[in-house]
Image 1 (cartoon, rainbow, N blue to C red):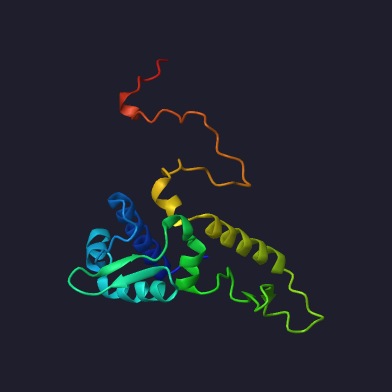
Image 2 (cartoon, rainbow, N blue to C red; image 1 turned 90 degrees about the vertical axis):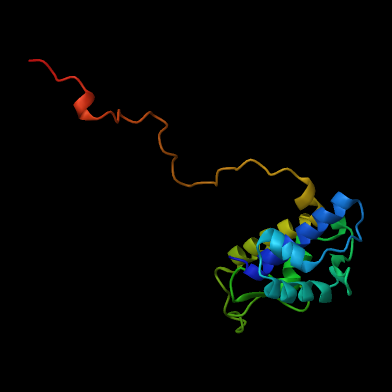
Length: 180
């Protein structure tokens, strides 16, 4: 599953607003969107659409005027990445046929017939739960205060390659000739 640039840029804007607010010690710090766009190399026109969605979701506030800009609507500790992503992407679904019903249950669109049970629903439900759980556990404050973790190897079902040294790559011209 890939999130769109809308989600990527939205998270980056939120992180930059939180970072600047924490640096200044004022969670109500107003930052012009043009500054964020220039600092992070993002297109201003596109960011305007992104922040409009974040504002409608109650995650950002704005101030007009010569000293206008955007600020976080709540403290970074109170904003989860699930809120940010859902404001920008809508309901999170790893595959088109899986969605969340009005009552919160996970629904597979291919199960319209009560006699048909989707054989992969369990897999996609678990994938969705893992993604949503991670986003709900991660706050904006986590992204600005935590040091970057060291890269971890991805789990593999194949055996890892041998760690034996490679044979000599010395050119043949530099190797002694065998004597007879």
